Image 1 (cartoon, rainbow, N blue to C red):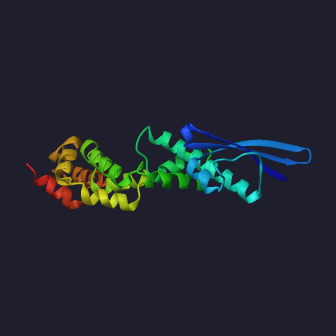
Image 2 (cartoon, rainbow, N blue to C red):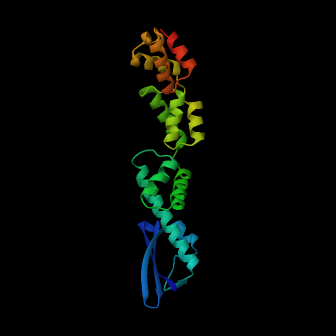
Image 3 (cartoon, one colour):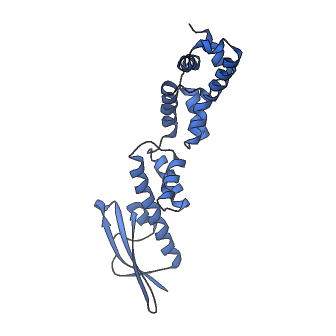
Length: 214
C-alpha cells in the first residue's frame, strides 16, 4: 500500500496543523485528515514549507495517527476540565468513555496535569474542607471519599497534613444532628451512635473529645 502526505494546512493561527494523507492499493483508495498541534507537527520532522507530495512509511503514518488522537484527547480534556475540577484518573475515565484509547487518555491527562490544568493537591484540600464542614465527615470518611473520586495517595495525604480541621468539634456537630448527647445515656443507643460515628469516619478520640465539649 502506498501512503502519501499530499497537503499540509496550518490552522488556528498556526497553533494547529491539518495533515491530509492518501492511502492507495490497487482499487482501494482512501483519504484521511489528521489534526495535530504545531509542536507535534515539528516532532514529525516535516517542514513548515511543505509542498507537493511526500510518501510515508507505515510507521510514520501510525505516528501521525497516534499524535492526532493524543491532540484530540487533550482538546476534549480541556473541555471536560472547563466544567469543574478533575483528577488525572477521573479525566482518563471520562476520555475513555468518549472513545479514546487508554494510552491517548493517559498521555492527555498527564500533559494537562504537567501544564497546570489539573491540581490534585489543591482540589483535594478544598474537597476535604468542604466534606468536613458541610457534610460533617471525619478524617477516615474524607480520605475514603477522596480515594473513590480518583485522587492519588499523595494528594490525599497532603490534604490530611495541610488542612487544619477540628474533628472533635465536627464530631460534636454530627452528634447534635443525630439527636444529641442523650444517645449516649443508654447502652443500646450508645452502641448504635458509636457505630454511626465510626461510619462517618471519626476516631474514638474524636468522639471522646466531642462529648467533652460544652
